[in-house]
Length: 196
Image: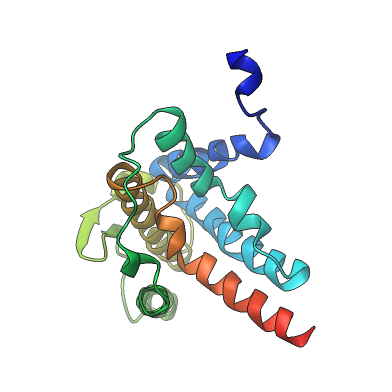
């Protein structure tokens, strides 16, 4: 009876494996961090083509990972997060803040490509701490390629840390309420639906 009441698992319930693989591969070889662009492009494409947030709601590996930690492993308090976390002003302010760091990362990559700055084998964690990450650079690639990878992995790892923390303190997908990619897909969907 209990087994019948459990929700049948779908293939996308295992997308957390993709997220876990990304962080594991990037930990040992920073060049794999480039795969993070896929995690940024696919939700936008789904919103542009489909006009919905299907990626965020079902297929996002990070969201599935938070569900695994919170619901399956029970690492959550299930306390509702304060309303301001999901408010429009906070979501938009966080998106601007995220874009600031993303643009800064691109500018540093361009500076390294031009030779006006040298490669920084570090990650900027929690938007504050410059953490050495040199062991993850075992291959010889153009310095700008590695610089972009270090920057992107730092952004992705920071959002993972924040998301896991929020999962434990509040509910499993609290991060998703103000995720920059989710916010952008929501904006795209609103524009598409207005045109209809």
